[in-house]
Structures are given as structure tokens and as C-alpha cells.
Picture: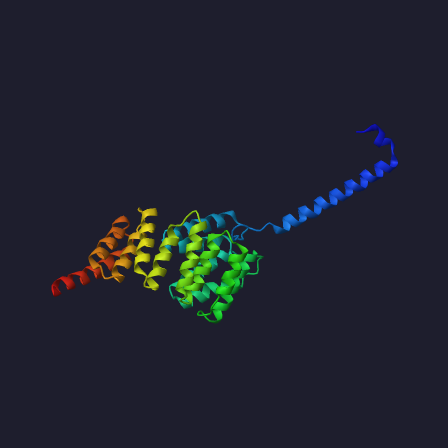
Length: 277
């Protein structure tokens, strides 16, 4: 402390005013910064740690395309927290993608009727369900674009936008959005799978093969990359390679009976071509 300043009232007064102004300025800046901070990823709103743990396990199963396991885990998460919006949303999206419209409506209606407080991102996702319940062919990409604007560093936000674009058969935009998600994610493998199918829809088969090969490179021990590559081979009528790829998927996991069924179809087509020769 400066002894002279301490004894001078005018100097003390100026220092006090200056201190107050600095403090006010600091609080304004702090408040502004706090308002500008946004969630990095779309939050999963739940008060149950058990429900969140089950939800995360379901997401991991989904990425491996273990859909039956994922569905079971999402439902278990809902048992722990009946207001777990994101679990209902994921289940509704599964069924919409696979054209199970009745079951889509069942989960979507439960999701939109949740009254618990949701994050801003979840509210946007809820809005897509409301519109898709009115008409499952509705274009909800504008909401997806809002989601990406809100969470520009979240690959999941881009994945949902890509999904909405795919639903309306805007495959070119869907591919570009998926590529953006790949750029910012730590787990690109499932996105390469999606990209491969999107390129097949565009009949860009060379690009599809590159995407599926990248998926195989990243996940060589999972059955789904081989099943996906088998679908590619079927599309380009390389039935012998399709058979081998499907059987590789089945050999890795004998629960993948869908792959063994596809293998039989591929073999029949391959054999028929040999007969014709």
C-alpha cells in the first residue's frame, strides 16, 4: 500500500471509482463469454447415470450395426428413464430408415410427448419427428441445417442432416455432408459405410468401392464391412466376389444369417452365369 495515497481522499476516490469500473467491465466480459459458450455436442438429457450408460452402449452397438443389440439396449435405457428422448429418437429413426412406419410412429409419438426439459439440439430433433409424423416424406433438411449451425463441431449433427438428405433422395448433398462428418469425427468407420451406400445410390460405383474399402480397413474384424462390400459386389454383378464377402461376414459372426442368405443368392447367380457360358 502507498502511504501517501492512503492519506489523500481525492486519490482514494479515483482509485475506488477505477476499481469499480474495472470490476464491472470484467463482469460484463465474463457474462458475455459465458453466454457465447455452447455445447460442443448434442446433449443427451437424462437424470439417470444408468440410463446414460445403457444409451452409450446402444450407440456403440449401432455403430457396429448390431441392430438387435442396440434396440434392446435403447429399450433398457428407456426403462431406467422413461423421459430419455434420445433413445426414443434413435429407435424411431431406425424404423423410419427401414420403412417400418407403424413402429416409427409409435416411438416418434412417445418422443414428442416427452415433457421433460430438453436441450436446444434435442428440441430441434423433436421438431423433425413432429413433421415426419405428419408425413414421413417431409423434407426436414432445414432443421438439420439448424442443428449443424448450432453444433458445427459435432459429427452427429452432420450425420442427422445427411440422414434427412438421404430420406428425400438428395444423395449428392447427403454424400457431401457425410464427408464433412468424416473430417471432424474420431470414429469415421461407420460414416464410410454410409458414404458407400450413398455413392451406390448415385451409381458412382468407383467411389462406393473406395468408401467400403476404407470401412474394411478401419474395421477388419467386424462382419458388417464384409456384408456391405458384398452388397457392392452384387450391385456391380461380381457375384463370385459377393459370395466370398458375404461368407466372410458370416464366418466372423454366425449370427449374421442375413449374410449367409445373401451368399446363397450370390452363389445361385454366379452358378447361373457359369451355365450360360
